Image (cartoon, rainbow, N blue to C red):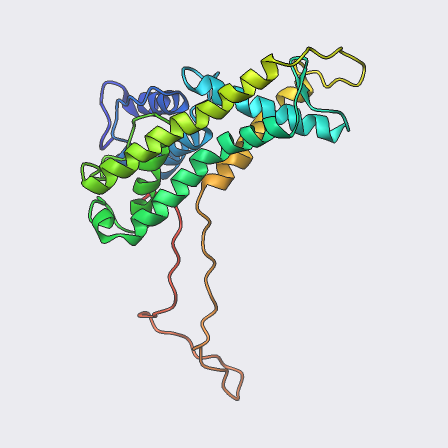
Length: 263
């Protein structure tokens, strides 16, 4: 129960966290830093999706419509039809704007996270070391790019570096994401409505509803920093003549890997 309000308990804290990171609320009734690994992962997963669940409340609405737009494009390609949504056909220009809006947040998140891990001034603000410290940095930029506001409290973000970079992530995460979507809406509004035929992909059926969640998972996977693979240790002594292999001691200096995890 460390970091949690006794009035709500663990279940109430987990439910509140999932609801406020799935939307743009950003409030919390518990310390996110003290959540279990799966609890922190659920919150970060919601932020990387763009705070679109449930229903895309607030600014998440146009992010949800963007994913629906891309799902309509992929679905139309699978059946060999010209992509259309709500009776409006779209082409290369609309998809270029859609992909630009989709990739803004991952590029900001990964770029600023890498820069923070290379600067000593940024690393000095961490409240924990190792993988959990990396999670603090990733969560900070995921929250600001999604305009959520929640944070792993262990990170001291009140420094010149984090004040400037989180401001950049917040500005471009909203405007560089919203402006292309508004441009798509303008392009579609200027087009005539296409006639519905037997080959038209319906966007109100059960088959189409399965496409946006798959698109969400791909976007989430693209935003998570890849785990580096351990390199083979070439200094391992060869096997002896009898076939026995010399083992390393406890104080081995083999290469260490870094991955997102929660302490």
